[in-house]
Image (tube, rainbow, N blue to C red; front, side, top):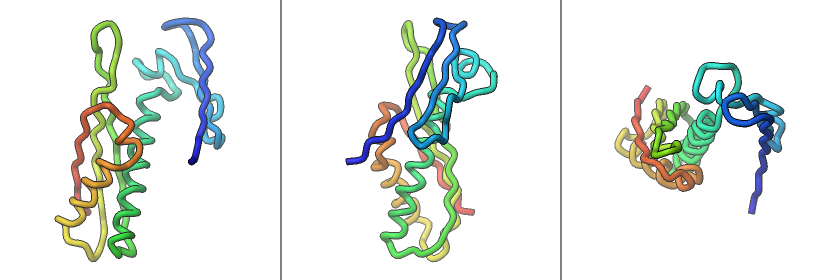
Length: 141
């Protein structure tokens, strides 16, 4: 079993509070987040952006391994994830994650690539974690 960690600190409360997030690897170290980075356009990160990065990278890696398992030896995969945060009752909820894949994979039929991509979308660990609608658009490039 693998365990990864991240930490968050928030000083002050609500809209005026400021937060910092760090990851075990050090890729994020005291990165700023808060109301302004989440709901406005202040510099820093936010949970939805981090979830989008996690989903895009997890899906793309899962598809890469599926293609390798199918005997494909080269290719390029690029994925953009768009995570949507909606108002729900008195709070908010992540309601969807839309993946947009651009794939250049010589030696595979488009239908097989789409099949493997759908499998990666359904089975990557981040997809399994999210309680949200998901879509996948594939562009062969």
